[in-house]
Length: 155
Image (cartoon, rainbow, N blue to C red; front, side, top):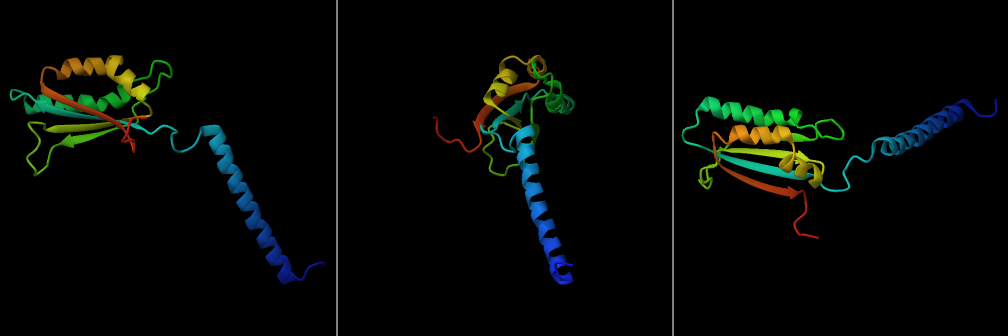
């Protein structure tokens, strides 16, 4: 035997650790090559929507519109990929104690991969257009603010 038993065990262990290190780095490199990096090169676009409902809107009508809003995540399909393109939708009823809502009672936050996807959603998506038509019956005022995460100045 060329190596003593203790040295052979240590050498085997070192080779296994080195192999795992090389293999794990190659997996990461291949996954980035195949699937892209984990973070987008352009920051996500966040679309904030605030609703003030009409005084005549029933609680059933409000619940129906809010449910339809959350349904947009599945029903808004990109025309080229034929896949849903809204990354996430969250929202809820106001519970602030500051008293600065000015009638706004519900907030929704949508996340898109890009400004282009947000633009398609706002201007062209038939599911969104149908939602806006339905919401017009019960929504008094809508406030929308869009931003890209971490971007505070125009380039």
